[in-house]
Length: 177
Image (tube, rainbow, N blue to C red; front, side):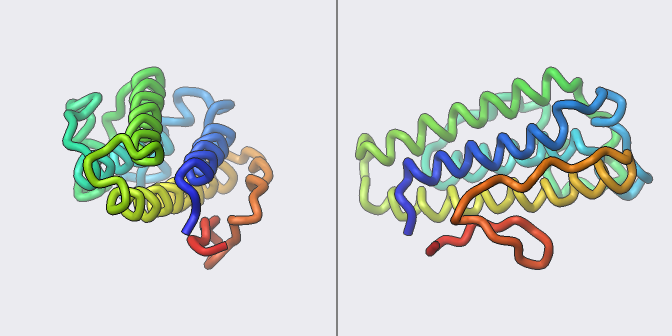
């Protein structure tokens, strides 16, 4: 298993790659959907953060949502045809940043042993961060397809890490590399 601090760096690397995929796009491009049964890039951005918060909240520390108004919209159980009315890019960015800060705070507390069951939560934290990183890259693939295939923008280079590989076209952090 990976060290939690190293995994936090991989989490930051994944989030930076996500930012490379969308930060140069216009707000209209971020909220545009190729068709009704698809999700806009902005939905994927909110969903990545929503899942990160949900998993940290439910597996390591109960805490309220940083933006309860986004919870229903960003849940993948919400059918794609109902994912059209997205919040502003600024609100999505603030949501993503707040969730990332909370992930760092909680995993940092686990890494430093400042939790009730440090050994058990270290195992949970390791698997949790690996899942969050791979979930980020999963949605990055779909963001890439819209960015390049539908919007005609070049893709940034893949992030550089010995822990990353591509499986079935998706970037994947391998848990035992």
